[in-house]
Image (cartoon, rainbow, N blue to C red):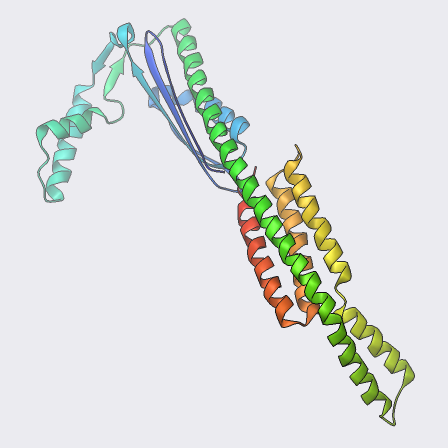
Length: 291
């Protein structure tokens, strides 16, 4: 499920900004951008993301900037900045344009490891890590809030699709009542033709009759489809609702719709079946986005 969350927490020594982007995915796939000086905490951060988001293609970025007294022990890594500067200017020339020195320097200063800082004390490290975790948790909270809003929209879309399928099923029931006399007329004609046949076989006749009855009767399918639609709505409202369960119910709905289409042998009902399949396909596409 898509989501976005961003949080900035500042202290006397650090400004920490955490940003989380989540895209739809059946599994959890995390990509992290973390400053090299704090890469040892990546596993902890990944665990926080896993616990909070459960599923999705997640892009996480962490930006940490020393401020106030915390930046007093920071110095420029001049050799590295110069190397970045030369490479940027050379790349610009290879691309057949000139980069101004100001722009090239600005880009070089934004590259990784351009600043050297004094090693903080253990107490300061613990404080910094706590601040980082707070920023991460706040960004994850906002991301989940975003997801909840999208989930509410999905719930409305699901209910609307189920309502449309129910409406189409009601139309099928009306057509089915008119279809029965036509089926009966065809059966009667078949029986008359069969009775005129000198090689008439009573056992074969009974078998054919049972076959036609089973082939054309969709009463059970209509009842099961109605129950599946109600169960889908009930599951949407329940606390243990999840995408997999909704998808399983959608598959059962699809089976009944397909059976109605194959047994109805009626053009008008077939058109309604196609419309029901279209609505069901929309539901299936979205169930993958539900956690």
